[in-house]
Amino acid sequence: MIKFLEKDNFKEEVNSQTILVDFYADWCGPCRQLGSVLENINTVDILKVNVDNYPDIAKEYGVMSIPTLIIFKDGKDVSKKIGLQSLSELESWIKDNI
Image (cartoon, rainbow, N blue to C red):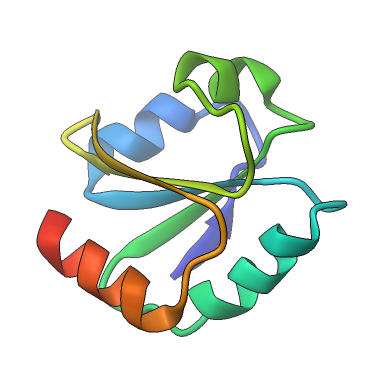
C-alpha cells in the first residue's frame, strides 16, 4: 500500500511497521518514474515523503539527492537506495532487507 505523509507523524509511521520510505518531489522526473515502479511493489508498505513539504525529515536522514528510498525496521533505517531503480532491482533489495 502506498500512502503519502500528510501531517507530521513520520516517527509514528516508521516505528509502527517495516516500511519503505520514498523521499521525492513533484517536480523531479526520476521521482515520477520511480513512483510508477513503486506501484508494482506489494511486499512492503510504502510511505511517500515530499522533500519540499518536509525538508527537516529529509535532512535528518541525510537525503541529499532524490529519489531516495530508505527501508525502516522498528524505527531504524536499515538500508538506503538513491536514484531511479528497476522493479527487479527494488524487489531484490526489499527481499534482502525486510
